[in-house]
Image 1 (tube, protein in one colour):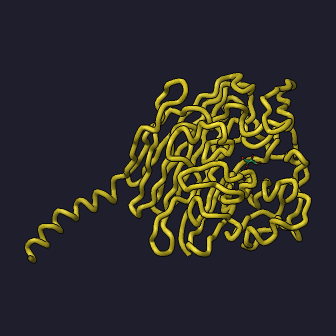
Image 2 (image 1 turned 60 degrees about the vertical axis):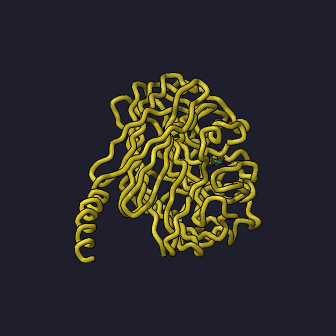
Length: 375
Ligand code: GLA
């Protein structure tokens, strides 16, 4: 018996060591786009069992599986298990996608750069939203396994050509997803251009820490490291004012239940049909800083968002109506929340906002980390 145990252990130990040191990046077909291009679903695992699935269609995070306080793993982002889910007309939600060239809205799809006025396609009423009619979320990205020792990583690359969706300059964009042992998913964005252009890249994951498909996120508690936010007009374009959150339902400086004030008689909440606003992060410089912390009391799951970006769009899934079925079932009104780290919406039309202009010879870089834990 003892001998057998010794033998089994001798076999197991090297296997375990191997599992801990070698990163794992799985790859499987995810179907073909309408032009016949095959796209893939990549799986990043860490040694603790966390799993992230990403497709190179749209640079999209399709699943994130993390444990609850009893060790039960659930998928905590809204998504689909097939490509058709992402390409169907009914899906206007941008689940998990990489957003660009310009994330969020540009008023009337217009901006002026170097004295030239550019017009980009509008779609959200009179405004442009999330990069136009065929933004980065609907493009096929080149994928490369860049896993290093102990850290599975996927690098996606896309060349957005001069004039694509009306934007100037050939823009080379690289987005690298890497999964750490602290249950941290790190996203590094890099971009260069050959002409002056505007750029606002983000990831549009929808989180529900109780598990995708659970009812609302109104019981989640949220902390946002923001003294100010950017109020909007009736078309959700920032008015240009940086308003203090003090004494308003936008004050999340102390962790507060998302549902506590969402139905208050507040003009900004009415315009957004809930929270759909950019928060101005309290930060100095461009180093990584904690932007948000979300806690779900029943599962004990916690999500911390760290970023180098100046803003975060906090959106409570107010446009979800229950018409979309995904892996987690029906995605109902306010059944998820987004924390889109970004520059402020419509920045090119607000010279007082941090600049979103990228010049040739410059390298754009930004990083966001989604870190999961249990309390
Ligand atoms: C962003 C916008 C929202 C909505 C979603 C996508 O968060 O601010 O108004 O358009 O994307 O549905």
